[in-house]
Every structure is written in structure tokens, then in C-alpha cells.
Length: 409
Image: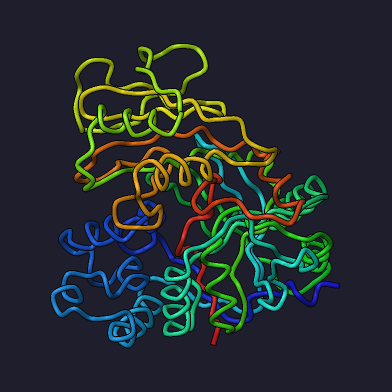
């Protein structure tokens, strides 16, 4: 039964801190390039290894990802010697606690043959993916021959048993081999389990239930496309997993609040000015330097059904129409508000995705704030064999990239 869940036969654990910027803080190409442009960030860092074609030198040379990969592989070997120590035939019990939740689970390899979307596979995606992102990440995985970050997989049932079994393994293991605090205040601890009955018990529980991809849908698809030695994953049931919101940013459209409101009203949507910040049923404002006049700074919605739109002059509330069950707000926003009303491609250059708590970046016309998708809705869509819209769920807390590297060659 456990054949599709495997130990890491050859890997490396960090000796102290992951070299360079915190890889997990950068959600898109612009932020990665900006981070790599800082002094010292483009040489000898895991971020540069994961995104070799986005360093200043690679951008200046207009290097493709395939052009940059040989140098990235050499840089990774240097990092393994300088900042890591080798391990063999292990799984890694893992615990992360922070302001956005807690999770206890195990880092291990998952056979990519177990990944599918047919409703019968052991591992199924929860969200749609961008094909170009998958292709790029598959190329990096193939070129490096090493997984540097883990997907977050959640059992569809039996979560309490998984948590209890890993807790027992952690107690038996004693002190963690890695303990660190990331830039957002989350404490990450990791232990190692070699061959023996405790490891077999953990792997048996992990493999007993199908798994949903909670975070890392692109990583999972890339691992399947690369078809190397497996998928590095943290399998966890929480117990404190949370689903945060994923917003949308309009950039380079030239549209202001009046133009947006007119376009949305033109297709029959109800639009009105946003109430002042701090009213019941709203979340904390999203930081944005786009302006500060009128009622600017309206909080994000906490329940599905409305979208708060922040612009440089004033903020709006758009009431979403009633939709069939299991229709997610993100799908309605991308279809009606963006494509139908504004003529924008939701995957095009004028629309960016924005996870909770991040700066929207430069040249912002508007930020469309959406409520977090309830976990029950995510699970219901998954159980029905469907997929959520791209970048609609932001599961936390996540495993930190670079604490454990897994050889895939």
C-alpha cells in the first residue's frame, strides 16, 4: 500500500539558515526579479538557483531558462557543499507554527504516477494551473535534478490519525535537526526518521488515504511533467491549516474608479461606494500606496458574494450575482468583471494575482479584494472531481523552501 509514498533516498538538510532571501516570500516573476536585483542576492542563493533566468545577468543577456540552467546546477552543487549536509534514506517529520496557523506532517517523496485528475488517483489537484508556469518549473526540475521546495498535500480523510502518528514520531525522535524562524514569524522544525517500525507506521498512515493538493499545484504538475524520481511533499492535516484570500490586481489598463463602475454597471452588476474601514463583516485593509483620498483603504470582504475594489481615488463594492452551487467568486470575477465587462484576459499582462498580505507591486490601477474561499467549499469541489480557479486559495502555513533538498536524478 505504501509503494507510492517513499523515503528520500538521497538528500541534504540545511546546516544553519537557507542561503539568501526567503524564497517563499516571492509569488511572481516581478517580485523574484526585484529580489534578485538586490546586492548579493543573485550569487550563492537558493532563490537564484530556483530562478536562474531572472537574475540581473540573465535578464541582461536575455537568457532563457534552458540557457541559465547549467550554471544553476553548478551553483546548487556549491550550495550543497557549503550550506548543507547529506542525508540518506529518510523521511522528515515537520512542524510549523505561526500567526497564520499550524501544521504537523511529514516530508517525503510521492510517486508522480500517483498524480491525476480522474477521481481515482491517489493525488489530485485542487486548482487549475497555468501551462506556461508548469513548463518552466518542469524545465528547472529536470535541469537541477533536485527538488528544493515541497508541495502541501492534505488527506481527504483520517487527518486526526496522521497528526497523532507524526506527533508520536516527533516525541520519539527528540530534538529537531533543523529549527528556524522565517521572515513572517513562523517557527519551522524538522526531524529525521530512518528505517524502522516508527517510519513504517508513519508511511502507512500517509499512504492510507488519497491526498488533495492544497498548495503547490504548479509544483505537482511540474513534477509529473518532468517525470523524475518523485514529488517532494509535506503531507499534513493541520491541525491549524487556514485558507487565506487570493486577490486580483489590474495594471496598465488606464481605468479609474468611474470607468470601472460604469463598465460593471453596464453588464447589470450592482456597484456602490465602499463603506468606511472597520465595519463588521470586513477584514483588515490591504496595504497599497496607490492613493489615500475619500474612503480609500476599504477592508477586504470576509464572506463570498462581494468584491471590494480599491483605486487611487475611491473604493467600490461590487455585488456578485447569484450563481449555481460550488461556483467560486474568483471564477465569477474573471468571467464577468474582467473578461465580459472590461475585455481583459484574466491570464494576460493586465491582471496579476495577489496573495494575502503582499504588496500589489507597481503601476496599479485597482486591487480587487476577494473573500477567502471556505475550506468546506474547496473540499466539496474536490470531492465532486472539480478544480478551483487558478490562484484562488492561499493555504497557510506552508513548509519553508530549502530546509530539505531531495535528489531526483
